Image 1 (tube, rainbow, N blue to C red):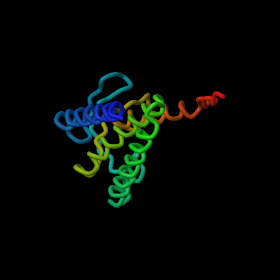
Image 2: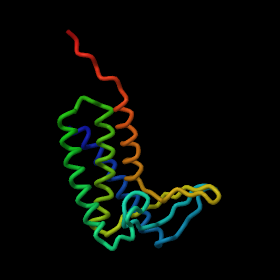
Image 3: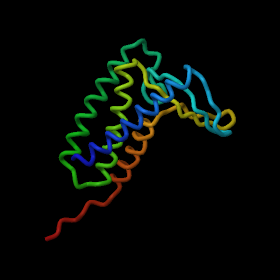
Image 4: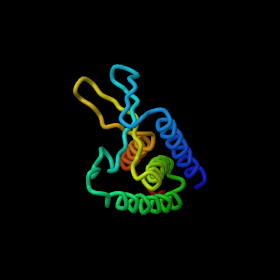
Length: 155
C-alpha cells in the first residue's frame, strides 16, 4: 500500500511544484512558445476535463470536489484490496495522484492551473497539467489491465 501511495505523492508533488512555477512566472493567459507545436501557458480551468462545465456558475467547484473525494476513497480501498495487481495499482496510483493534485487547486484557488498547450496550425488540444497527464496515463493502464486474461485457478 505504501508503494502505491508514494507514487501518488510523487505525482502530487510534481504537479503542485510545476503549477507553482507557472504561477510565479506567467501572468494569466500568457504564452511562451517553446516549439512550433508547443507553448507553455497559464490558464485557469474552473470546470473538469477540457473545461467541461467551466461556465456553470460556481456550483461545479463543489460538485467536482465531492467527486474527487469520493473517487479518492474508492481508489484507496481498491489499492488496499488489490495490492499485488501491479498494472491495476499503478493505474490507480496515477489517477489518485492526479485527482488529488487538481483537487488541491480547486479547493485553494477555485480553479485548476493548466500550462501545457499543444497545437498544430488551427488544431489545438486544450491546455492541461501534470495531474491531467497522470490521470490519462493511469486510465490507460487501467484499460490495458482490463484486457488482460484472468489467471485460471489451478486444480
